[in-house]
Image (cartoon, rainbow, N blue to C red):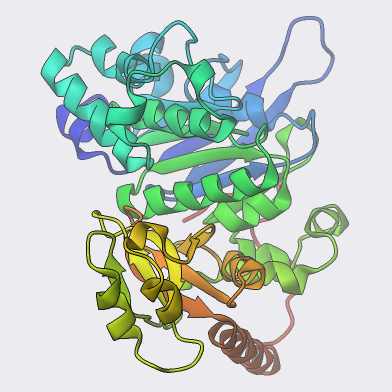
Amino acid sequence: MADDDKKTAGHGVEIKLEEVSKRYPGQKQAAVDSVTMTIPAGETVVLVGPSGSGKTTTMRMINRLIEPTSGKITIGGQDVLSLDADKLRREIGYSIQQAGLFPHMTVGDNVGMVPGMVGWDRKRIAERVDEMLDLVNLDPTEYRGRYPRQLSGGQQQRVGVARALAANPPVLLMDEPFGAVDPITRGVLQDELMRLQADLGKTIVFVTHDFDEAVKLGDRIAVLGERSKILQYDTPEAILTNPADDTVAGFVGAGAALKQLTLRRVREIEVGQVPTATVDEAPSVLRERLGTRRGAIGVVLDKRNRPLRWATAREAGSVSDLARAGRPVEDSVSRASTLQDALEAILTDDDGVAVVTGSRGEYVGVVDIDTVMNTIKALREENATDDADEPATAGSDTAGSGADAS
């Protein structure tokens, strides 16, 4: 992991835990007992379990914030115990709940801290700060000079993710990073993480107690019991459809069929189009593009092609500036968003349509209720066919404390 090509490539590397345990002095039982698992390069693996299960301890042993008592951990083939602990942590991104920003430092200084520690020059750090803030959809000119106290909780979490990614680490550890924000902001931040991961391909280890969050974010989920015993380590779909035991089934809970909406992404469905105009074009341009069809609605875009407002032909014709036409686009989904996210956005929109955005927030198209419902119907028919064709299985092959993902 310390090789120059791995530092600059930015793509994920494989992590292996082999019989890893943590025992604290004076305690009869280990906090983490003989965990073995392989975290594939470039995937998001979510550790989910109840409070006290040892999931955070397991994750923190990867970057040696907690030293393992026994066992072996390798990152990109290198034994982490053979590396300098401080150097190791600088090469692994780390994002925690409530962001953990330094209050006396500006946003720019917070984001640029790790690149500065590893010896980047000032010009390169400044460029990287702006790049990272733009990546998490915060305007660098507006936010780099602010202090954490001047940001909302969601903005602080975005800065925390930007800081964790600033030195381009191959591995990102995330310890319940969205647990302290409101549900709406949490959903937006989850979408942002999925968008970033689609672009960056890091190896992400994500800790949460929220199974719905695990299903939404994880390529694989490790359901942990006491002392981080791996009850099941598999894809979200496999765990939802075939939980290994009653404990795992309890995590899945009611509504497993509805949870499967989180397994499908907006990028998998056909996106529609509506007329658009940029904010610096004349209102008549959008009105002409909308034509005379009753109920037609268009989208006003900013100078970076990001959606700003919904507007009908009548609304476009009643203003002298498209920046004031219609109503704001209050909710949108990205191509990495789930069908459940899309359905929720559609149901809360006055016209039953959700805007779809790309990796930098640019307009891609729209999705409506008919498209989502037709997709759900097709998935249901597909699953019914699969169930009829495949023999029943007794349980998951990956259950147990020695789970490996190959």
